[in-house]
Amino acid sequence: MEVCYQLPVLPLDRPVPKHVLSRRGAISFSSSSSLFGAPDPRQLSQRRGAISYDSSDQTALYIRMLDVRVRSQVGFEPERRSSHPYLCIDFRTLHTRLSCVSTSASSGPERRVHRLLSFQRYLHSSRLLRGVPQQIPLHILDEDYTGQARCMLEKVGNWNFDIFLFDKLTNGNSLITLTFHLLNQYGLVELFRLDMVKLWRFLVMVQEDYHSDNPYHNAVHAADVTQAMYCYLREPLLAKSLTSYDILLGILAAATHDLDHPGVNQPFLIKTDHYLATLYRNTSVLENHHWKSAVGLFRETGLFSHLPAEDSLSMERELGSLILATDISRQNDYLSRFRVHLDQEDLCLSNYSHRHFILQMALKCADICNPCRPWELSKQWSERVTEEFFQQGDIEKKHKLEVSPLCDRQKNTVGNIQIGFITYVAEPLFAEWARFSDTRLSQTMLGHMGLNKASWSGLQQEQTPVSEEAEASIAGTDTEGAAVRRDSTTATATGGTSSKEIPQGSSES
Image 1: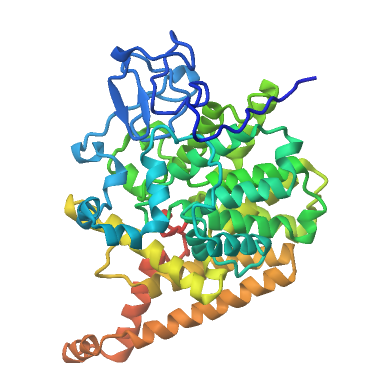
Image 2 (image 1 turned 90 degrees about the vertical axis):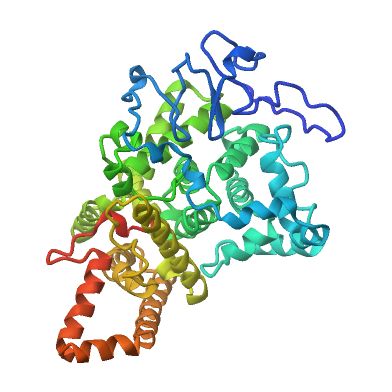
């Protein structure tokens, strides 16, 4: 019988042993050195993103950050550098505002104004604390904030859960706090004998590997998807059928499904010949990267090292199967398969493969559930994802590349993008989910989605420029022509064609 030893909680006023401070990125891992041994100074020669690595050692486990090499012997193709020199820069710098330069010289009063964020910035910049569990995660804040965060967690299963407010109350640690709470609430920490130090270190690394510069694909989005996934796991059909193993996979997949997202979409990586696109042969490039990044953190922290090797590998594969299902380019494949099961009424949740497929569909729904949230939340997510699209378009214009669909801020609006996304992507998916799980939650989501679509249509009509109509009339364009032009714009923005194909660039996942 294996015994899982938990490391004692270390007081902050005592020196921390080296075996606890095995911080990723602080040492170089090579096949000739022990895992926690002192690194050779000659090997600490290169650093990219959050990982240090030896230029002569190409045995890194998995690609977790951009520009990390892997041997082809472990099942991947070698990295090929892009032919575009500007693509060698870190994606984290693409959206950096020039105004951020002045924050380092902020005055005393300004630091007091931003006090709630100071601890998070200190965590991210401190080598000594990175990967070490926070001793008192919320008590740095005022008691009012601590109490409100706890009250929100008591209602974490409500569909109108405000993840933006929760992120503020947890000092920017919404993903860590929420995921840990759910794992503990289900009793998974004890059941799977997870070491508390390893678990907390894993969650800290996961949150840090989401790019805070991304308007949409950041840790708050991951926390929102995790909360939505929890709501689906509580649906009657799933709650009475899923095993603890299924629930563990579902929560971890939701928390890591967009890990290390660069803030640009797959077509951008392909057309710029980025090495990740070459590595994964232009197929589910981002999703494969998210999956391998998560597996890299599993192995780096040793979160499941106490399990038999076969069980760990099986868990990694099944996690990948869930994350890969979020690829929007395969939306129609999963939706067609879902419809066939529902039409034939042959879904049997006592069958593991069927349960796994339902977990895939649940994660897909959680990933793009923003249009189904109440208007106040849905509108914020819509503005964020559109801004991320537009930032990619700005990069493409700057480097004289063809601007991707939906990414030109001069030709698209938040409204027409969202109307198209709801029409061609969200409505078909959630209609089938409601057939599978016809519950109050499903009807609530469909109701919100209909109201949100109507709200965006109303805003579109109000924002129609008068000068544009006047110009059209002067040019001899009649009302019908203008309507056709508007319909064409909407179809282009949403990827709508005669066959209503869904372009990869229109995904919010």
